[in-house]
Image (cartoon, rainbow, N blue to C red; front, side, top):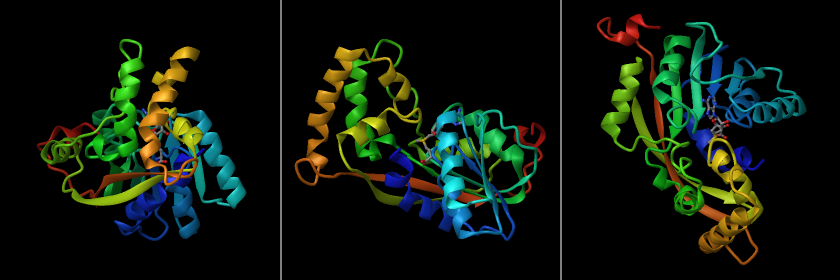
Length: 267
Ligand SMILES: C[S@@+](CC[C@H](N)C(=O)[O-])C[C@H]1O[C@@H](n2cnc3c(N)ncnc32)[C@H](O)[C@@H]1O
């Protein structure tokens, strides 16, 4: 369970600090995984209510347990696909997402769903890899996994990115988001040992399905190659691994939509 604690914190801070979160806001964290930024925000702001949603029941179970342990009564979690949110239209004041919206599933459909649940004037703040190659760990792992992957499961097919800024903004505009401001955050993915690297790569949001499909002998070969490729990022033999990464923060406010756009009518 390394992802939320090891990776997300500087990014979570950047996402939460990028927008003003109104008093008593109803906040939805899309593809919340183990529960950040939901839990960070719930701890900082007792006046807001946060709903974290994710497709992975195990991740949601973990987030709920952590909320109970922290006494975060203003954070709830639910299993739900981003493409079909069981959340009422125009009920949400703030949308946040770290490496979820735009990265997983069907981004066109999930962006439309995000807009559907937002009130006019809602804020959004999303962390996403503009280009997955700015995640060193992903870049090292993807070719190795592609080499060993059974046909039809090539890495990259599970994690999406939109490196072209114009295309990215157009995608958001088509869904009804309007003006989007972009900034960049550089951070480090710190993992204590190789087992943590393997666990992270095995998550559904990374290469989960592909790694699960490896039989015993193949998994051993993949681990051997990954060990040797990642060694250079260990700060000392047997020590912590530190992978540089860089992502985008996309933020804005949902304004009155263009009545000529399909997104206006198809909510
Ligand atoms: C890279 S993780 C990010 C998790 C979390 N936001 C964080 O930063 O720690 C991507 C998450 O998306 C979830 N996911 C993948 N496809 C999804 C979908 N179609 N609907 C909802 N969640 C999905 C995965 O279960 C995973 O938890």
